[in-house]
Image (cartoon, rainbow, N blue to C red; front, side):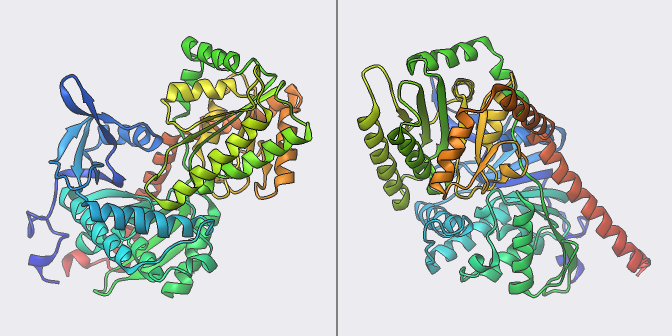
Length: 499
């Protein structure tokens, strides 16, 4: 490569670099457009990722690359809350093909153990490649020499390799927020090697669970032919560039301090009491909180609860259940059908067991602000998290963080990443309806002393390992990997600067 084309020398290519030392790349920008009396403005999105990275952005010259949320719209870059935001435009067709298509009707079901059948369409794949290149180009344009770029999630799995090709001077991290499937399932993807090579463009690839990292490395060995040593892959590109890519688990968490603080606010506590009064002050309140998604096991949970009512082992006079199912991907056919199925089940349970005075099941197809969610957590004696497959499940951790009095019981699917950390929950296989019913009864009838012991241990884990610590651990590991690789390069070629 000649000097004029070498992107590792700013003096030779002064126009090749941006102004920012730390860049986050995600499908969406960390802001939402809101309308007010002064017209449209931007408001920071809720969520742990934004919360975790905001301090990093404030300390560094930080930029965030993502889609602003409206198709067929060009939005100029702008500053917001100590961040420079670089919008990436998407057309209506690209939203349909890249996002609703390849990301959410191919990758999402494939990565969640084929709970629903994935679809494989070449036009979707073509759109995915096109959009990933646009994101990579946008990130490269704002990154300073030697900057750190952290790419987020399954919608952008080709970006690391595209970034490395354009800017080998960068430190590149990738974090996969959803599960990574076993080799036997990933093998179905026609573009499996392309995805593997795309991810291997990162110096560090983070996953929720050790099993996800192991699944990925097995796929690397099988479909890309690389040798794996201590979770490291020695990669050599077509133009002769060599580097090390490493895969490791970095379980994500929540802003535990914020949740615990809200749980002690008088207005939130009073709202939790009001919720129980509105349900008729039952002895036990059970709660489920999910996006309306087929991976969340909502139908299994409702089936188990309905059978407990039929068996008379739970009565509507003594117990009530709240199911929050926030809207999700309503333009996708599978989600529309799921909503019809869930609402039909809710109607049958309510019609069969409600009385004038008592509600068996309160179903809420809405999204709620965090204050209302914490009030629901405080109102619930038993939290039901029965996902069929989940990268982490932060609702489980939010419930634990909110239980500042060390009360309450968590029923948790063993197929969630959270099950690795919250071992004191009542762990369950949600496919086993009889086992799920038994787990619910165990939680409902658990002695207060035992419930308190379990909750205290879980709260310690969540509070000590919050989302800020997660981001610090990942970024520190990325820096260490880069420093180690540079040291090894100098040891192998001590006279490189003189050559």
